[in-house]
Length: 223
Ligand code: CA
Image 1 (spheres, rainbow, N blue to C red):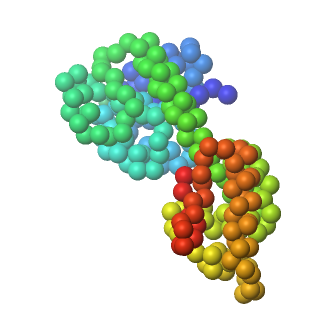
Image 2: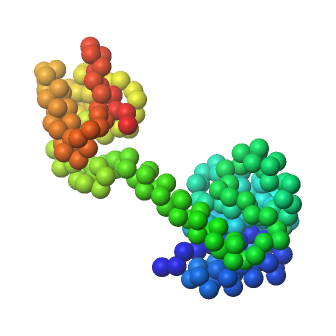
């Protein structure tokens, strides 16, 4: 599937020129002419990158960029009409991935688009290295895409810790989290379950400690 670029640009000629060049490189693209409709559009579409002009009707590109960054890490390249503005923009820490100055050659823009997309793909694959997913309906946990094959009790223990990342649970709290019938179980039971979970984690991530024990206090999850 082609990657999809959103162009937000009120100068229609520039936008359609960019669309032509993007098409030549097998990108799909969409075009919006106003800043104030971008957020709504993004609620219904998932482009791979945004080319965002700064001087826009409705809402400035700077404001659009800031708002997008509150909830999304989608790559953004800002288009500015003034080279001397770039320093100021950098100082604003808008979270844009790159800046391109007008007038630009469409070829250059496409090259920058590719660079930014490549960089962001690398970042994402790094992020995926810290990947623990829980399916609380099926009681299954995947670490880096591998099923940890936990028992129900082990799953509940891990889920309790993960869902309160960083919080320390003592053994009694953990027991309450996994047994609803107030049954009496030895402290050692929790320790031995934790030990088994750790062993399963170690088969996938031998170097990494995910469940930390704090002597006399209990356990916490931190990655
Ligand atoms: Ca403009």
